[in-house]
Image (tube, rainbow, N blue to C red; front, side, top):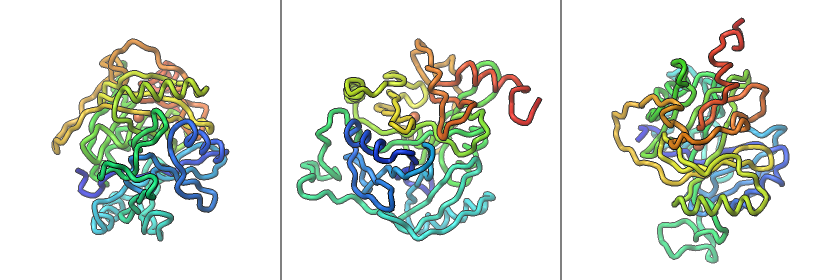
Length: 339
Ligand SMILES: [Fe+2]
């Protein structure tokens, strides 16, 4: 429903040990490698319509290199690039890469690599992977709990509301929800979407001085039962479950969080609402209203405040904020540049 963007199409993340990360994604998470080019490994889930949805690139630290958004058309790509420039940011046109055509790449107002692209190669399954379902790009994975497709990214920002408003104005994403802490009108979460789901871009508060960080990368499963099976498979194979399974208030999605070997947090989602209202007004949730955990019966692990690349100071998460982060937000003396 964005006039420019159809969907978030793929992410490029960094890992200090690409081989270990790829082993995790393929052996325990049910993704498949489709390409390896210049040290980067291109992975897909069985239901991804594009050739790949996740690129793992070598890097000193885990982090987000690019979040790539597909436009509705070649014209929409030109219009979106012009709109970005009209909103004060100048990017560069680049000649495409494996599986995608020319792109407009820019660094967002809070440091996030953002790529706009129209031409993307659709996945063509070889005969042995063709599905009986004509509309599926590939037959269902034979690994229990394998995700169907890439779903969203949640990044960290020093000011989630400000960042959300920039992406909403420049790229016409709908802002679906905010969450403030209960103690003060300080926004810790913002959720934006290009389409009918609650978010394909989440933004959590970051109290560190490192811009452009990422909190987690999320994939989708059709049913809650599959999410519980995925949790079982991961646990049984020695992958610690960081948080969940439980259910977000915002978006009404079931969630499960864990880490891949680089430390990067991965989320699995199922469920969730569909919302087609073009004039939707975002509600302002708080942790006490169940923004993150609608049951309000658990304590967020401290580890959930880590984002990537690592920094001393933490971020919020879709689970709200820890006492440590809340203290940083409420105490002006503890904030960067104040004292
Ligand atoms: Fe998420």
